[in-house]
Amino acid sequence: MKNKLIYPFLFIVVLTGCTRVQPNYEGVLMKNYGREGRGDFSVVTGSQGLLGPGTELYQVPMFEQKADPAEVVITAKDAGVFTVDPSLTYQAIRTKGADIIFNYKHVGIDDENTIMDNIEGAVLNALVVNAYREEARNFSTDSLMNNLNHFEQSVEIRLKKDFEGKFFTLTSLTSGLKPPTSMAEAIERRNNAKQQAEQVKNELEVARMNLEKAKIEAEANRVKASGLEPRVLQEQWIEAIRNTQNKVIITDGRTPIILGQQ
Image 1 (cartoon, rainbow, N blue to C red):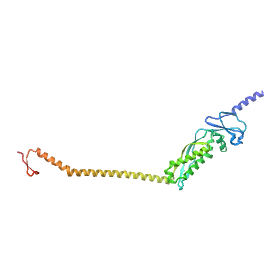
Image 2: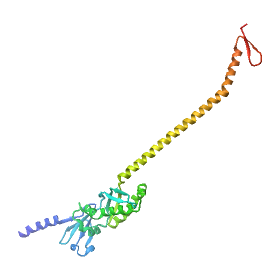
Image 3: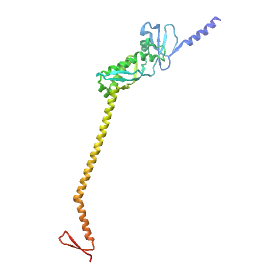
């Protein structure tokens, strides 16, 4: 009777104590309380059965994570101050789950729902801040504004290497660089001045074209008045004489005498 009560109890314990690696997670099994260091951590898959004393199963998410670190104040090499509001996506490198658990066990990794948040706050966000601040020192204020893509690429190249060293892959990065208010206002004034100068240039070009048109029309009128119009009048005069019913006497070859109709 006693054994009949014990067996069902043991069966329930085995079922409830059985642990399984979740889909799209990498399971990491720690043995011997981790006393032997990295060698006590190994990547596992599937069900791990009943875990004994000193043994624990951790789960590392293998899907993409989104991080939104706090704003960072950066300074160019000539003391120009900017604000960066970075956002990024990353994910753990598959097969590196054991390294992640072993290296970041101190930040709180027992809950797979918060493990990445804890690693971000303790490790990854610091990498982002340092990358932006140190890379900004390679640029002057003007070059940083005029070569924003180059600056962002230099930060991204650095962070990809830094993340890989921490067993993660950086998949995307956006800087959200903001110049100081005074510089933003100066840039806006400069852009407005350029637009106004371009508008004046266009207006002057239109005025020049109108002037050229007026000159051409005036020259055409002068030519018409000095040469073309007298010839037309002469032709009309000859035609009038030809068609008149009166007698026309030409005296000097130029001035006719018109007598009354016969």
